[in-house]
Image (cartoon, rainbow over all chains, first blue to last red; front, top):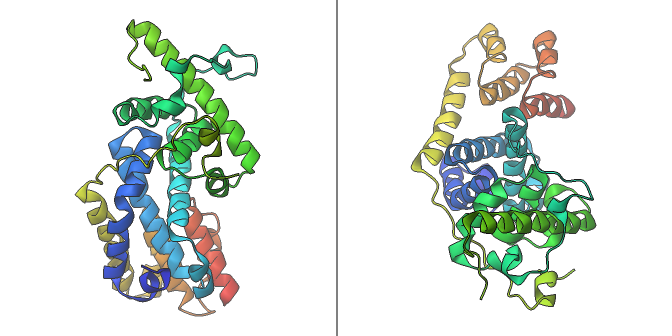
Length: 194
Length: 104
């Protein structure tokens, strides 16, 4: 489906486009918010925003758009606005450089990178990622769950690639410590990596 | 930087995209309903005054559509209300005004 088709033809083309991308964007928003209702609101707002924007874009600009990336960006913009309004992510994490939260652990059984690959742990990880501060939540969601590469995440967030790598690395450190705490509180090693 | 280079360096297989959650049916219905409502609302405004009033509608997509409709009235369209749109709380309503102004 091309943008030119969506823009120049009738509402049914738009309906097809929404159908095609709604699950992907809804999943993305759900991972960012941890709330089905917020995710639906955000994606609905994103599609309306995309439609309104598209109507005023010149054809050349529309043809140059990368559809999937652009819709992710629109959704992310709506999420950011939503987060500012609702004052989400009030998790009191100590993120200074000396913080124990960012201390690297070498233990294999708390490597979030490996856990992302195990379907049975993905939902658990989604919940933990959703509890991280927004900058880490967004970067980790894009990189691990949406499987974008560093360059794609950098373009989406309008940040240098180096900044994205650093953010993902620090986010993984935070996750690692959250996993460690969860293990200690649970008393069992539920995140064992084979 | 190659795709997921760090994982390859660590001997870890790059993850597949996670399973998708199914969007509720109300999502698509809500999108279409809001777009239809916006277009019908603007189409139903028969007077210039009514269109200007729509610039203050609580739904931002109706305000955005109203900007375009007022602009189509031509250069004699009331300037003051359109200037007020530049302070609208929604980014796309403000951009609609700026964009239309640029191409006039």
